[in-house]
Image (cartoon, rainbow, N blue to C red; front, top):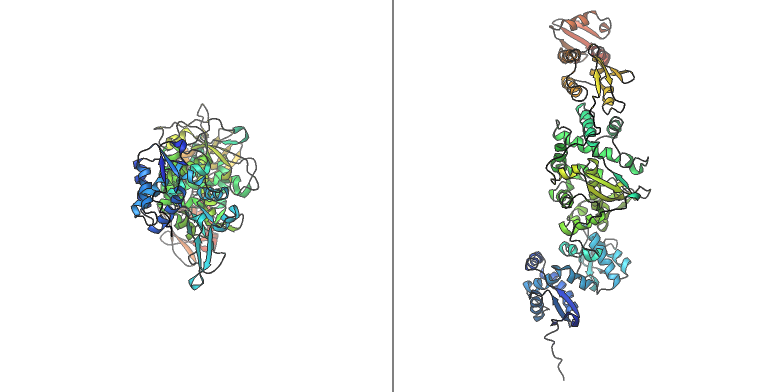
Length: 622
């Protein structure tokens, strides 16, 4: 009997690449150490399984080592001694040859059948693929399943899926052939494969000196933003633009604010697919109102926008997710409050954008691919596992393999639109179509504005761009009557006068106690209205106006309510002779109220509204 001689040297090496079956590339000592540490987290069985794939690939081949530094050849020879049962450190060193150098990984993947490469590219770009979808794309079984103990499903790998990891989003794998099984790669390996899957280098941030802007809409609002923010602040001061406890504005609040502020919109051609006609208004009003909730006295200046993007938005980002994902239902803010989720979306995206030299146009989809390669990703499995997200336009549940294209990528694009809404970016985007799920998917290019460079810390200062060369006053106040005249046809603040005055003619408004107090309920409202007037109408009004405001403040403290079941009992200020005379002589007051001793006034509860309006007409509030 002839005994087969054991192959003690299944792999050979040559110094001549032209004579080699394949060429491998050395990595730096730092890269080897980095990936060796990462691989330590995986089990011996999984490492052994991965090693067998690559060892089979190298076996009986002549190998040349480019940029030779001895590590690569040494790791292969050490592993070849006992490939079926290697020590863990030996297996890790062997795997790091491929993990630490994407050229070696690409060399292996390029030898796979084209059908298998299609599945690999899908996983690299989308993180996951469902096993049945993998077979549909390639015609190859990547998993086999069988019924096991307690009628549960147990999935097994095939040769095609040896380097993948299997997972399921179900908590329990009850016997059901519809229970999905997903294939994915370790994140560090997936990132290394991005240049191969995209067939392009990702070592530098992609830019485009001359994008095809003639076929795109270019948006910039840098010159308008500070006027718009000033108007938003004014409405907030009046109490008409406050977010609720969930960080939201009502549809009626947004509609009223649009009428007053008229912000420049992204899509202003009459298109209103899925609410995109007021997209910028929703982003601008909500986010600025969140800032004013945390800092009520914040001014309209570059520093406030910088605070907004460096402090407020990171702290309240979970409030914005429904705005940035209008096509998604099932979002639960508690699951998206975690710092790691916010950091991966905001901090990493901004850090990439600010690395651009100068202010070039950046192609957006290439930017997101570069972001993945340089910064890594979120643990998406955790979020999809906890959520039941649904695409409300398509009425389909979002599965793990569509979580990136339908949730994470729109979040990135939506955040870029949010930056543009505050003047930090120029955008270039295609027109909306009926097939557009969100407006954000139309985005093609972005470019930092001078304001954006300031907010991201690339420039130390920023000078507000004037809308006109000369600053003209917006209003003129009469020195003898309570009348205001608007001085400019396109006066952005004129609409505010409707809340405190009565229109009496072409750009002329009369102010009276009843017009000022119409929307006031207490002394604080009166003080806010006067502060608003001085900030937006006239900071230093004539004497007649100063006396008028002092009178309103004094009279707003002259009446104090006292609790009663049938009447509202009011305590009159006995020092206010004008009030006492009014109560005593006005004929209509007797219809609504009765006087009592010690300067008390009893007002019938069912007549309280009429009585209140009567007093407001004379400048009194309680």
